[in-house]
Image (tube, rainbow, N blue to C red; front, side, top):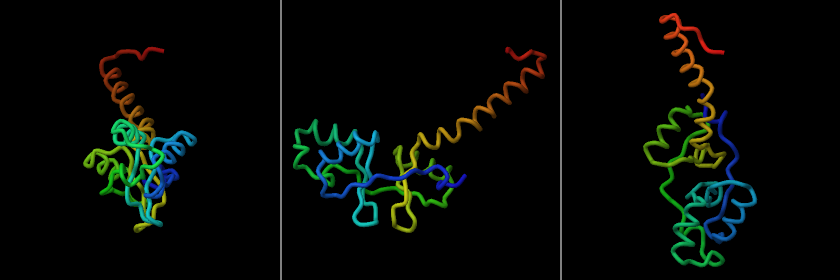
Length: 145
């Protein structure tokens, strides 16, 4: 399955935005992260956890503290035409739950672990149900209604 079928729009912040503004955006949009972009190129990601642990709990002033101070850098990214399983592998390898999706170096979306899990839920459920049905039919056990 192609990543472009599961990705959604990424919400961006500038490196110089305040962490207060980042928190407002996340709250207002009901999201947990912002991709930090320098022009069209993603340079980092900041999550609600980053705002809590790296900024607030460290005693920094969110009204004056820049996003670039607390964002994660060294981004792993996925291509929109890439395979979802490759994106999942990248997430597991890098220990992240979200990947910016790029077309060359331009940000075009975001894919999350929950996006992949939701897409796999139906097929995995069907597969596991089928395995159970095969075992029950071999054992002559009726499926409960």
